[in-house]
Image (cartoon, rainbow, N blue to C red; front, top):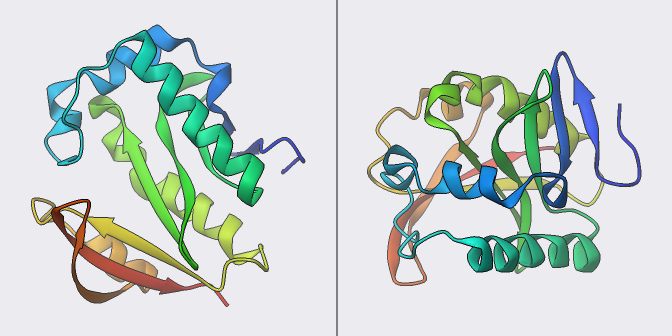
Length: 165
């Protein structure tokens, strides 16, 4: 089920807008060392001002592009954030879960990809993963193909692409 406010739900997983989540919840999530292990661009401390800036940047994507990142709930409990962000002409998908919720990643990703496949604006999705990510089987099972190693903001990433049409 989707609505025009960016909320979608399926089998206990709900995508809601980031402003619906208390800043302290996001601070605790993003301050977890296991989250930072695979986020080489995470080079700052999370505090209220950082959360406000982060949420505002993600909401600006919604205003500009009509799509962005969601907060993700499992049976009403915040488990992380993720979604789509327009990078030039490409829609990049990212997902950042709480460590004790990493096991939901494939299910949440499938739900998001179903959303992308139903959206005519998204002919394909890209994924940028740090080389520290070794378990990439889920991407292959979804049909994503390795594109290249790229530099993004001075950091090397592995770029994958998944056709959605």
